[in-house]
Length: 638
Image (cartoon, rainbow, N blue to C red; front, side, top):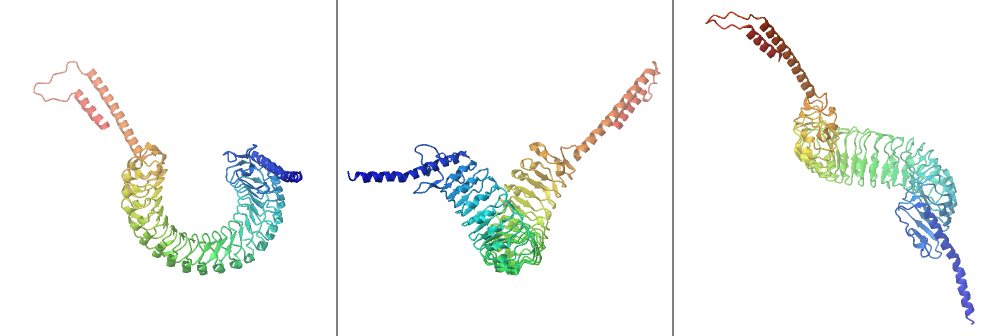
């Protein structure tokens, strides 16, 4: 008996100890079921969330419990196509540390009750359809470290109370409809590391206080409506690794001390920045991406940029830069993208660019560059896209381009390039776009261009090409757009073109083509056709919906007979028919008149005419005379 009391006492104590957890267990399970009621789980991902005696909510999908207390500490329902709203019951999960509902279709507002989750450290509601304001009471989440609300429809102001969350490290509110200014107090959060505000409707200026964020490495305000200039003390933001101020309305010059930053990405494109590119940028050795495009920058490209040996992307296009392309850019051996188009650059394309063996995209279009295209560019064997459109380049198309086996896009249009089309171009097997239009290229079209099986667009218009359209073009089974217009091509339209079932556009106008257009009748995808001003003849077919093309597509071919009333051949045929009808009417009228005269003569002639003496020569009587007159009149009328 002496041991019975202590054993019973221990048992009772253990029951009392477990009761609070059992109570907590039942409360969190009920809360989860209440939360589920606000969701529309169309794909039944939450099928195991059920109120049954044997149900253990700690093993429900997306639920994580504490091993000791069995309270819900994490709820991850990301990317399961949930619809509906976030229930206010979420605030009853007092021990919740992580809430992840990203990538669903949730709508409604963020419930104010969410701030009752006092243990919450990570809140991710991104990529939903939430609207309304961000609750200002969110500052009550004192343990919060990650606030990710990007890609929703949130409106209103950024809560200035965010600065009252002492442990907040990541704030990502990008791609919403937030307005107003960036709260200056947010710049005094010593632990903030990531501030993503791109794609909103924010206004105001950039505060010099932004450099107070000594731990901030990511600052992105891209695509807002910020005005003013870049703060002169921007060089003091020494922790920045990514600085994106692009697509705002910033003005003024780029501060000189921006070169003190050791950022990996500097994006200032799409503003109204003016002045010269600071040479000190060439000292930013950590730069991987430099984007100054679409501003109003003037002056030359600093040769010192060639020191950026780790830079992979250099975007200077869409400015008013002048001078020549520095040969020193050939030292940027890690460069993948070099975009210098749409400036006022002069001089030659430096052969030194051929040293950029990792270059993927080279664009120098719409400048005033002269001279030949360097053969050295064929050393850029990883080159995928080359665009030199709209310059004053001369010489011939480099035959060495056949080495550019990775090339998919080649645009040499609107220059002064002469010579013939090199057959070597047909050896660039991956080419999908070839545009050498508006040059001075002569000779015939190489038959081997028909070997470019991946070609989607071919434009060799506005040159001096002669000869025929190669029948081998029928092998271009992927082609969508062919433009051979404004040349001196002759011969017929090849029958083989009927094999091009994917062709949407064919332009052959202003050549010397002959024959008919029947070879195009089976090109059922064709929506744009122009064969005007050639020497085509025959009938224009109406089958296979060929009548969808307007008469302007065929004008300038006098012997080409169309289906519209004003077609030249139809007009001539109608005139001929009208002329024949008038002649017939006149002949019938004259015939009737002669018959009437014959009847009258017969009626009034004597009944006993004097016979002619034997041996007298025959004389034409009245009847014979009128028959003769009728015959002549009819023949004249007809």
